[in-house]
Length: 98
Length: 98
DNA sequence: TTTATATATCGCAATTATTCGATGAATTAA
DNA sequence: TTAATTCATCGAATAATTGCGATATATAAA
Image (cartoon, rainbow over all chains, first blue to last red; front, top):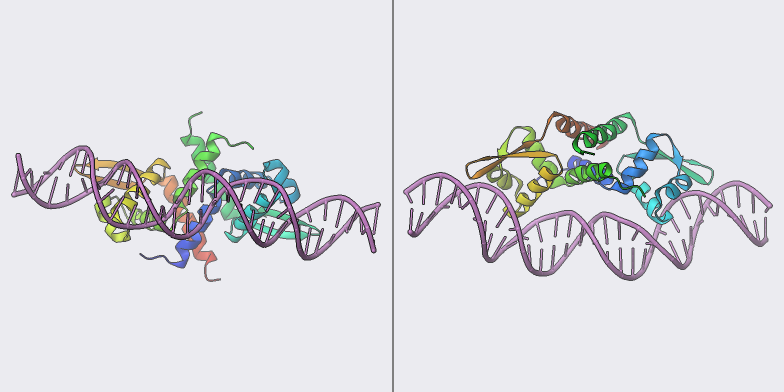
């Protein structure tokens, strides 16, 4: 069983997006950079939970952080990631019959 | 917390790809349609495990099956899915060892 | 019909994910 | 300095995932 470093990265990336709450966060960030303090009330889960999710997505390469005083601003890490997210979203729109 | 049907589909799709063994299977299928009997020895996990993984990926819209006698032939469900898989793989190539 | 092959499903144990509240640390405001 | 804000981390409870072997089912071959 060839479990190389690349496939671990890929799996981890998909795992980070494999949760509806984290997708909600990601969708919010498609609208632009936001601080954790604005993200977690919007999401409606505990601050500790959202904090851990954001950290996970940063480690997975989905998001990027920068500090701004006490706050931490999160955004989609880059354009390729954004495109991948949007393609998946479009796929879902096609597949789900409303 | 707005957990709509679309985001559940998206999460499920990513979840299906969020595992290095399942990515191994998917990579094998990028080379063309294969039956389960050829997939599971290549992967090196139990037949029951691979069977469940394949079913999961079909339900998630990643794969497609068709019957051929006793066998079941699996392939990547469509071109959009294939492109998404390849983009993620290219991303990993860039990100790993940098 | 009996046997062999291909796949599905069940129950189980081990690991990982989800989510919380409590608390800690850092920074800014009063 | 004290108080308030923002974020991280810990421990705990519950749920989900991972992977196996055993077994069931369906089809094909003998």
